[in-house]
Amino acid sequence: MATWQRANPLMRTGKLAAIAFYLCFALFPLYWLIKIAVTPDRLIYTEGTALWPSEFTIGNFTTVIWQTDFLRFFGNSLIVSLSTAAIATLIAAGAGYAFSRFDFRGKRLVIALMLLTQMFPLLMIIAPIYRIIAAMGLLNSLSSLILVYIAFNIPFATFLMQSFFDGIPKDLEDAAMMDGCTRFQSLRKVILPLTLPGLGATLGFVFTAAWSEVLFALMLIKSNASMTFPVGLLTFVSKFSVDWGQMMAAGVLALVPSCMFFIFIQRYLVQGLTSGAVKG
Amino acid sequence: MTASHRKAPGEIRARRSFYWTHVVEPYLYLTPAIVLIALVILVPLVIGISYSFQSIMLLRPKEAAWAGLDNYVALWGDRMFWIALENTFVWTFGSLFFQFFLGLGLALLLNTRFTGRRLFQALVFLPWAVPTFLSALVWAWLFNPLIGPLPHWLAALGVLSEPYNILGDPDLAIWGPIAANIWFGVPFFAITLLAALQSIPSELYEAAEIDGASAWQGFTKITLPFLAPMIAITVMLRTIWIANFADLIFIMTGGGPANSSQILSTYIFTTAFKKLDFGYASALSVALLLLLFLYAVLVLFLRRKVVRV
Image (cartoon, rainbow over all chains, first blue to last red; front, top):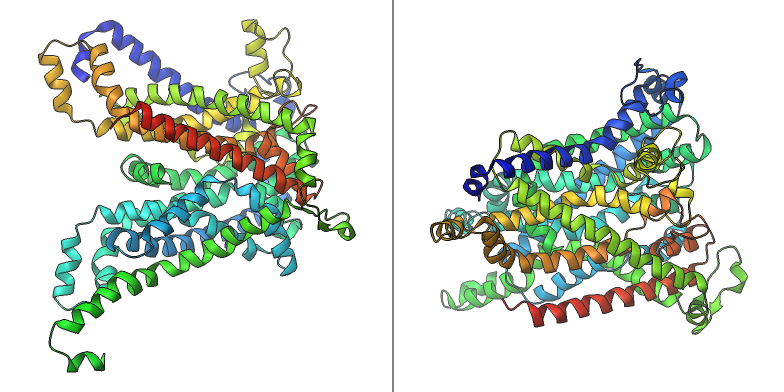
């Protein structure tokens, strides 16, 4: 296909236009977020729609960090997302390994159940979850949120890990087992080191998902002390909806962890995600 | 273990290891996942379905009782439900249409060679990593004429009579979240379709080129038939996912103004979250689940008829 397109100058211009279009479409909203965040308050309305602010400030960021609760929200979100990512990845690695290496009774049933959880509206269980957690006295606790997020993310993470395990030749662990390793030892010493990129990618996906989740967090967390970042930001928006600069500065801060993980995982996206995404 | 020493070598050990590797050992690795999914998702799912036959309003705890089909009768007569159903179609297929075609275009573009392709790929996939609540807020701000450029651009193009916020206009409000959803969802389609494109053997294109086929023929005769199964399954899963996806609408418009952008999933969330009417919210969820199930069966049936792989 490449040769066809190189031959035709019209196609080349079209291609450049398409590249420019996709870049603008993808980046403009983020550019705007950052632009408003660094515009001084007094210029926001007068230069509201100018593409480039005439002055810059980092005042919005310092205000948000030091004079609001966002640092705490950020910490809460970090605790929730990191614990969710670590535990879900560990559990999913076990399940993915079982799917990849064993042929066992009930395999199809378990896979079907996991697929089912990807299909039905998760909002369906918001009422029962709320009542169960309220009955256990765990409302407003981060651990209840972590538990719920882990369960939500296991199916997708499992299919993702399975596709990474599938990519590692079975001969490797057969050889290790022949040399006297038990299966678990060969998993730990031979297979896991090889699948580190896969583990990293899965961690990233689960972290991003937990970092973004908002509806269950809204339902289960009401107290200021244990709000996660999205809930805190939404509360902030509905209370102080004129502090544009500060809201957007908070938004930029929310973007940072996801983007860091994204930069790390994005090269595994096309090879790793697809088999998992299509199944899950 | 001790028993196996007495048996002839191989015999029992083989059967034991068969039992071990096919029944016990896999479940050692699977149990944590199964237990968590069962406790946190499947059990609440069943409880949720049972809620739809009860009257459970947290604000009026004394009236909690079995209500038979009352919730479903109320649902049938609820005008909001039908409005939300119609909006669900607009939301789902409006988003899906643009996500798919823009995603396909992007995948085809990324499948060619040009300088800076890797950087380009990282940048255009970025929206996908943006947390959904933030995408919603960013787009809500972009549509706000005070600080966002979009109303002014739309007015300049003649789409709007004057720069006002379309999120406050009952006729247009739903297109705000749809725009955000397109922005957020294009990378997903691009990623999936790109992987499918890369699995097409390049020899096919070389052979076609030698035989004098045009680029368009290469696309319709090789690319599309290879992509078709992937497209069918991705579109189906994505439709279900989008129909369930309430975050963007809930944050951007809250279903308003006057419920003009309320879809079923936001209606479920609002009923549970604001009215705390768990019985009715569960009945709505069951209705949505049945609709999605019907849709999946229909698509799988059509796929079997049309795509013969």
